[in-house]
Length: 267
Length: 298
Image 1 (cartoon, rainbow over the protein chains, first blue to last red):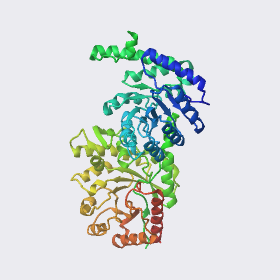
Image 2: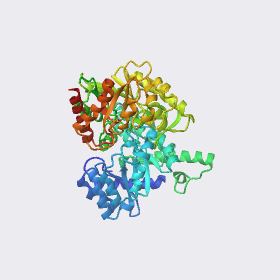
Image 3: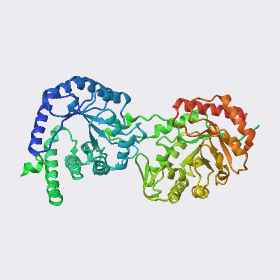
Image 4: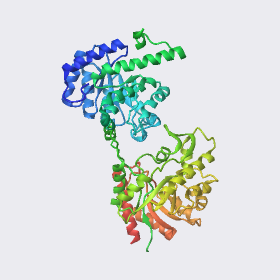
């Protein structure tokens, strides 16, 4: 949310309600992600989160500007929101100041982007998690743990076709097997920015959906999508895939779906 | 005395990678170029006055540069060997071509290859269970890289730091596998104290032997006991100590080398790669080395 332009809180509230409704209807949990681009947006967006998101509910803070990250962490601490915060994200671009801020104002959860500019294969993603690929002084997992962050999500760093695109999907079961951590990716970002798809404008949403179904198919635990208006397309698509997989895995492995699984909603 | 040595480097050079920029490009789904880091290393070497420069090995530690691109290797905390090691595509060729574009016509370029024995010893072998077989597969793969490089560089350096710990009986054959029939001159670099293995080094089929005479001054005595066919690259400033040696100190060191080895000295260089030094220190060491070389050359 709030990825482009000035934050539109009225429409954001409407979008959030629609997403939570469809989440309830399909059975797939939703966690809102708030993109904060500029310093001037920090207070307004954090206030919006306090007002709109239920008190027991987690949310994700998505920031790229290192200096903005530091201010947000301090404000989340002041407002006693760090225990509900997913810090999006820790990656090889982490600064010393950011590490210090994370130690001081530690969020409960963090998303780790396993992007390795030296090697975009699943092996490269493991390398950057384990030792930082000599771009950081230690692996990204250790950086997060040393900051005291308890719960980690791994983003397998989706890339465009022609640039090792399949690696982000292939890395999902590899990372889950290796670390037992939940994994997923933001493949919608690749679809959205694809110049190749400019020649096939009517196909972008279909390609987005078809890319996203790979995430549950390969055992992914979450899919990051956007903007929030796409919720009505994304939730049934992922739920459909979850049901398909569940019926198969129960027949083959005897694995029964949990109580809130989309398949329970179907029955 | 009219000496005919040149100043050069062993390989790596310090670089500050802008990881924030790399991530910014990732989020925008744009490709990052490594050229600016190569350029920063090369421009320091040329500005310092080095005659024969290298690409600075800025992409990775020198083992990973090769194992990242060779089949059969995967990088974890260390490189693991999980299948037969084979050459796939050129590893450092594009970087060498880029450096050639950057440097003036009167500068030379040295291509760098991690030695097969050092690669073997640096990896965790989960496939071969036979050190010699793995070392030779590395050698066959590196030979193909050397063949790619030979048309684009003025010399190829094979870096075998592990030789100072242990030099196996098959060392000559191993280095020959990489170096044989290459059209450009070859250098073997082994840092550490190689005093005990000088006779074996003398048998290697290379044109230049490169060692850290500054950190290990006992090498002067060790080498003067033997007749060796190669010329020497005289390590003249330390790579493991941030203290910048004065021009006078380096001049005296070079003069000592000339007094002992005469025109056997063909190259002056730092003792080893400079990757772990602060950039300003690495640059000043190169600058002082060049100045000292000019003092001795007259």
